[in-house]
Image (cartoon, rainbow, N blue to C red; front, top):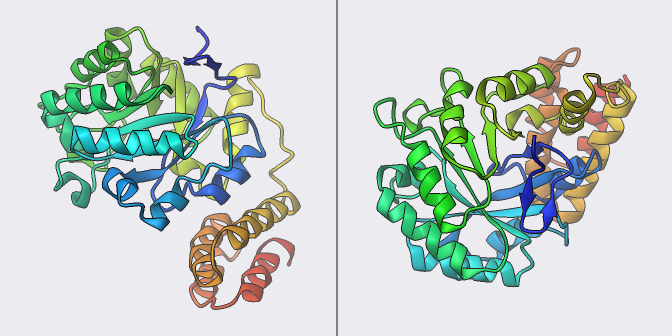
Length: 322
């Protein structure tokens, strides 16, 4: 496989962290960064909110000067997307990604996200506007198509490549599937064969074996990990090691190691957010870390009642140290 190049940056890993709303905030990216130099994506950022200078949106874009963090923008107006791209660049973004894959109703109703796959002309205008607006690499994330009858990802991929997009990620589902059924990695191969830029496979890749299978079926240049990293920020390292060596280390899989990782993750959250927000978000983070542990259902009930920071760490200790 050729090295994945974004501008002058050569990615050292073919494993990438997906953009996930309300998940891939700075604390999450910091804990994932401890396990390797992976390209990582911010939460999806609304282009209109960037321009309106919404404080929460700008906080979502905080990359702490990480040279391998990309900001993902979503919107349906070329000029607004271009303005948001320029502002993102001014705020320090090293890479930008255009979202044409989000399937949720709120985004699709505004003709953004995966709805853009129904309008190839508008998709092209947005891609051209963003690429021409900034001097940094721009990538694209999309699905196979709107539905099974309209799998036009290869067509949009060719449009994107011609406009200057440097890498494309394909989620192996159509918008009509949402997150149901199984990702079709083999359909991603049609996109890989349509363009000469790197193509990344996404969808249902949760561990070493699914990563290998996705690469074999799609012939993609790399894999993007989303939900598989929830509560397991070390999984990107495991997949990366497996792809390179056919083996993985076990150093992060003991209860003590998981406890220390989760504790650092929570510390990052408390440093980044005001206390009420940190407590609320910590509940969700703890849910992910306790998944699969002994008495997980009991702990989930306790986590739902957390109201204070000390209680967060008490339950964390009980989960992994009891």
